Each structure stands twice: as structure tokens, then as C-alpha cells.
Image 1 (cartoon, rainbow, N blue to C red):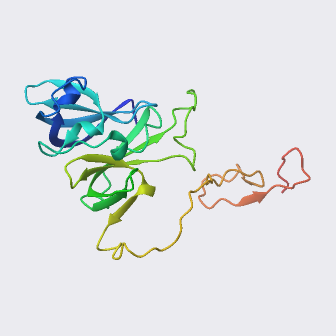
Image 2 (image 1 turned 90 degrees about the vertical axis):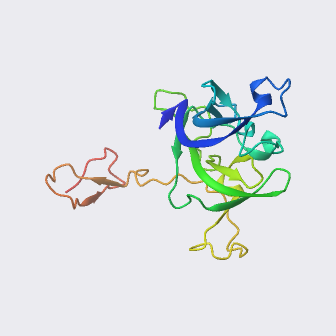
Image 3 (image 1 turned 135 degrees about the horizontal axis):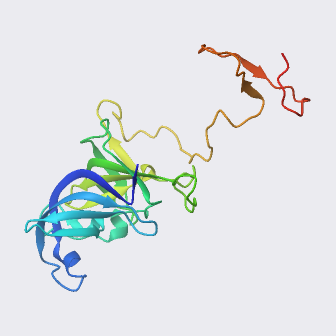
Length: 224
């Protein structure tokens, strides 16, 4: 888990000139670049770091800054990215089972956009000494972000619930609707009750016996 900055799988692409000129001009210019990192700042979308052909470095550009070739029509940022970063703590994973798969998402403007899976961003809260100020680990609010190279030449980041994966070996019929899914609201734990404890006097064994606490025993003493 990285804090603030993280490496990502290299993306060789183009950056739009207007993102190098504070949106003042150069909307018709495109420059080759290599995107190599991401910054996660709550209140902002994930922001990407890249190097250009003249050796110049650029920090913290949104995903709308990039395209696979010159003259690709720029789409609004909120058509490509649905959520801001959930915390400063970010993980980057290229899932083998999704690598190279075609995907489709339903955009804010209710347009189906297709592309190829690249990698995934995910978030968690900080350590126990940090204030948990957001939704990074709240079951019904947390979202990951799958980075997609779109067929139209743009890049996008979308969460699970907006995305469909085309996998011939498993998702053989994406048109089939299996079930109406509900967002999980539960935290799954096996250490959330006082009715079971393990005895501490059984050394050298892996098959510990579980002792049942007597509900009438207010001191929590194990009765043998």
C-alpha cells in the first residue's frame, strides 16, 4: 500500500497540449509521453505523472489529459472518471484474470463505452493513528477504479458497478441478466462476539478447542 504516490504499469500514449498550458491554448497539440505513476489526494480524481520526449516531467494530470493517438476527441472528465480518490492510501494491481479483457461501462451520459482493461486502483484508510475521514473502507460506499484504454482513443477509470467484462471462458453470454445485485452493507468478521474464546493453555497444537463462555459469568472466567 502506497501513500500519496504509487507506481503504475507503464502507459505509452499522448498528452494533450492544453493540459501543459493551463487550458489556455494548444488544444490541437499532442505530445508523446510515458505515464508511470499516480497520486491519490482526497477531493480530487486520481492524478497521473508522466515523462515527455524532451525529458520533461509533469505531475498530477487527470486521466482526460491522455489519448492513444493525436486528434482524439477529448471527453469531459466526469464522462471518464466517476469518483474522486477515497484516501491518500492507494494500491495499484494488474489483475491477471482481467488483463487484456474487453470491458464496457455505462457512462454518466448513459452512453456505453468499450475498451480494454489495463489495471486497478484501490484505497484503504490509514493506520490507527490517522483520522479515518472518508469512505475508503465503508462497505456500502467504497469503490475501486479500473483503468481502461477506450476504443475511441481516450482513457477512463470506472468502478465495478458500472463495468461489464467480456471473458469468453466465463462470461460467455454478457446479455444474460443473472440477478439484481445489491450493494453489500456488512463488515465480515469472526471476532465480533464474546461468546467464543480460545484457551491459552494448549501449547504446541494447531487444533485448538473452543470454549463457550457462560452468559451468567459476568467476569468472563472460563469454567472447566
